[in-house]
Structure formats: structure tokens, C-alpha cells
Length: 142
Length: 142
DNA sequence: CATACAAGTTGTATAATACAAATTGCAGTA
DNA sequence: TACTGCAATTTGTATTATACAACTTGTATG
Image (cartoon, rainbow over all chains, first blue to last red; front, side, top):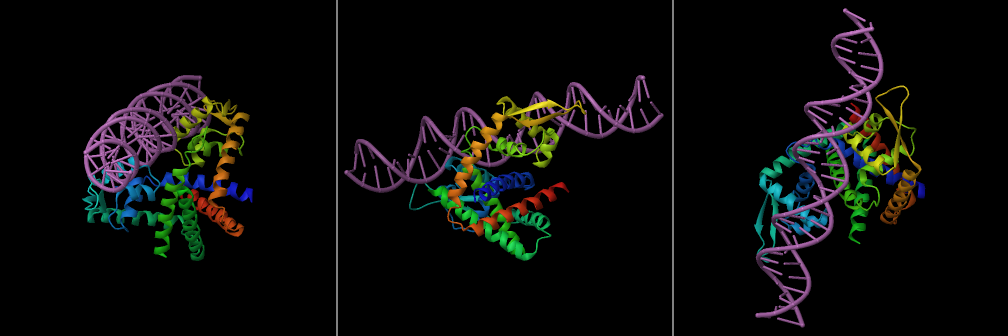
């Protein structure tokens, strides 16, 4: 059991390294912007606060990343009526377009990487990763 | 099928983010040094070259990381008889000790994170991650 | 309304990384 | 054997991702 965890721990560290090695090829978006947009793409306008929380980012980091995306006009802010300190962040059509293009490219890469996997294995991978992320997210909230 | 890949792609991006958020807690070793030592811990003395290759690091990056580990005396170099340009990198006893302590802490974290998983699921996770890493490593060699 | 708390921004620092140029050694060929 | 090109590494420089601490401004409550 200890051995399994040891192996998992190692494989995760390695996975992070290997995926980092391939992800620079993101084109107009950098890695941090990409994950942010992928959250924003599916959500209602939200406060920076909430974004930082979901991605376990320090608020200052989230603030800068959002500012960078705003400068490129991939997101925009609108004032939050209920709270003068907050603005609500929302992806722009341009942001959505760029995001989708990058995603398409990334999916293309993964379809090569995983090309030889039978579909059942892919499903397993998907489920397992999702579950792992949930466990990670829960833990960090502690 | 496209949908599965899309999901996988997203989950991997998220996984990278979430694990990055927890990994600063590495103590005496930083993230990059940790993965390097984990390779060296199990290998014969190797050239920087080979390390960079295995981890898909730019050689210059590997060179710096090795230099940092050397400064802390976690690795040492010995000349390669067959090649004057190369030295062979090897983990030191001190390096091994520090590595194992950090690893123990990390395994501890993962045992909390994955505490609720039945053992069968853990095995699945391990296998799946290993396979994914192999596919990634193969692809990048292209 | 005064004080404490919340949300966000900005100053500063660090880690991880890549690319390009420079150095030094090796190996094959004219 | 001297020359030329390739291999292995290091160092200069730049960029991205990130955190922590200090500051500003708004909100809410005793």
C-alpha cells in the first residue's frame, strides 16, 4: 500500500514535468491564461476571488493573470452592483475564440499521444483523473 | 471520442495546477531538484545529457539544476574516463537521505489526499498514470 | 461613525525554464 | 596529423508562474 502511494507520488511528479515540457506550444495563450480561460469559458461572470480559490492560486497571482488577459482583451470586467470592491470577470468572444483554437491544438496533441489507447482505457483515464482532481481539491481546502 | 480527449486534456491541465499548488511544501528540496534526485536515486551515475533527455529538459536547465544540487552536496560528479567532456552524476548519501525524507512527507500528503480510495482504485490510478507517462515520453521523443 | 474585515492591486522576490552564444573535447577525413 | 564539424556543457539573458507582504479602498457592525 505504501508502495502504491510511492509509485503514484512519483508518477504524478513525472507527469507534471512531462506535460510542462509539451505545453509551451500554446500559441497566443500561456499556460496560466489557458487554465483560467477554461474555467471562465464555462462559468458565469465571477470575482477574481472565486477564481483564485478554485485554482488554489494566491489572489495576487490571479489578479495579475487576469490583468494580462484583460490587456489582450480575452476577458473583461464589469462592476458588481452588490459590492464596490469587486468586478465580475467574463470571457470575451475574442477570448473564447482564442481559447478554443488553443484547445483544439492541445486536443490534437493528446490525440496523437493517446492514439494507441483503446477507448475503454481512455474512459478509465478520464474518470481516474477527474477523481484525482476532486481529491486534490478537497484536500487543499482543509 | 473527441469529448473524452477534451475532458482528459482539461483534467491534466487542472492536475498540473493543483499539484503545483501543494508541492511548494518540499522543504529542503525544490520541485525540480526533487524529480532529478528521484531519477538519480535509482540510476547508475549518468551524464547530464541523459538526465535532460529523460526529463525532457533543455540541457542548460538540467545543467543549472545539477549545479544547484551539487552546491548543496546532494549529488556529486566524477570524471568520465571515456569522455573528457562529460562527468557522471551520482546522488550522495546526504542527497539520498534528504530525498527520502522529502519523499516520505510527500507520500504522507498523498496518503491523506487519497485516504478514502479503495486499494483497487489506487492500483488503477497507478497503472493509468504510468501508462500515460509512457505515452507522453514516447511522443516527445518523436 | 470608527474599527475591523474583505477584495483587489502592486512591490518585490524566487523558481523553473528556454534559447543562444561560448567553450572545450572528440572523431573522422583530406 | 592538422582541420573541420559535431558533442557536451556552461553561462548570459529573458520569460512565465508564482507567493508573500504592504497598501488602498470599500463594507459592515458594534
